[in-house]
Length: 128
Image (cartoon, rainbow, N blue to C red):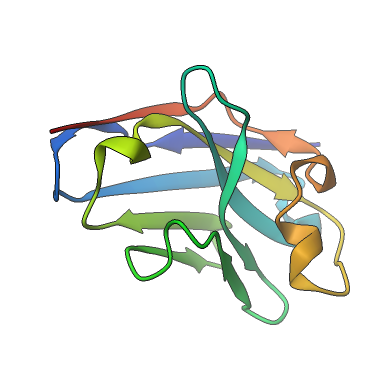
């Protein structure tokens, strides 16, 4: 079993920055990749960014490219999401997820059903 816990959410003004953290615990030696998803009120959950441990590949949703950056500490199985130039449309509950499987291409890591372990979420609110 793997547990994931997010932290770092909060409220900022339009154009501000926040950094989210996510720590995996338990059988973390089996973790292959970690990712961030988000769900805004009244919307479907959507992919934000992912990081694979073996190849250190990163993947981003088009809506956050150039503004968000995912990084991680492989030894601590912790990932970070640096969010800059935040917009009101980034307001959502942000969830961290982990998978123990390695997939052949980036599109797999953007699919929520490929992740078995989820955190409780942390709220990010961006006001205009």
